[in-house]
Length: 277
Image 1 (cartoon, one colour):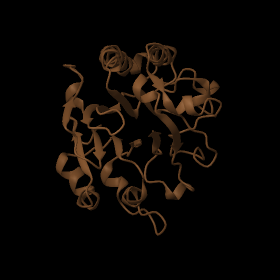
Image 2 (cartoon, helix red, strand yellow; image 1 turned 180 degrees about the horizontal axis):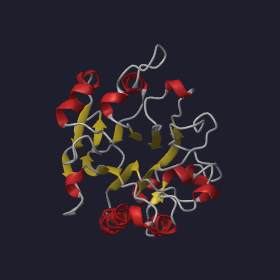
Image 3 (cartoon, rainbow, N blue to C red; image 1 turned 60 degrees about the horizontal axis):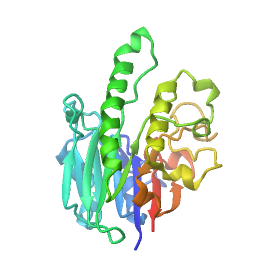
Image 4 (tube, rainbow, N blue to C red; image 1 turned 180 degrees about the vertical axis):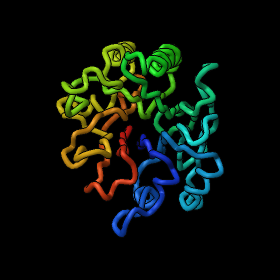
């Protein structure tokens, strides 16, 4: 049996569920049609109660929400929305600095394909370029990468299936940004960031969307609200799913659910979905 896993940065769950216009009924409409079994959410930016209230219609239809909010009000927050209730949940990755900031949560499920499955939702810091005014954010992201990389090393070596999805805030390669030449010094495309992702892939993790679309430009998952970025498909591929060997072997299809028009978006990110057979 297959399992379908989606990752999406909702850019504020309370805003995402609102009806934007006559044609755009928001995230809840999308949720009522998705084939996904598990949806990894980032930037929930709400308390547990606010998020449960926002998703109340979906929860009433049987979805289960597991989440962690940030100690900084209105910031970050990640979650797992699933059709079945997880058998175990873990918040954070053992970091004194980052575990309270709502950037990582793991959930275990009984999977019909492998028996055991761990999924995780990640919202990696955006960081900044290495300039004096942005030095603090630059160093924060480097510390996160160092600590989180150790955790992923242990997680990826497990015999059970593991999928980590989220807003990684790193475009791994030139094919992952429309205007890569203009972003060589931009956070999310700095050499040390791309080297970090390359190290994960060399250690055994698989970027399943790229593996299934090896020659594609993108497929992009985030577009700036500014200018005509969305209309021109001038995007970044920063939302993706990494799978360990047992799950990578099952990846059969991947799609980015890009809105048909700018005014049909309910987030500045698009859902990224992978079907594991």
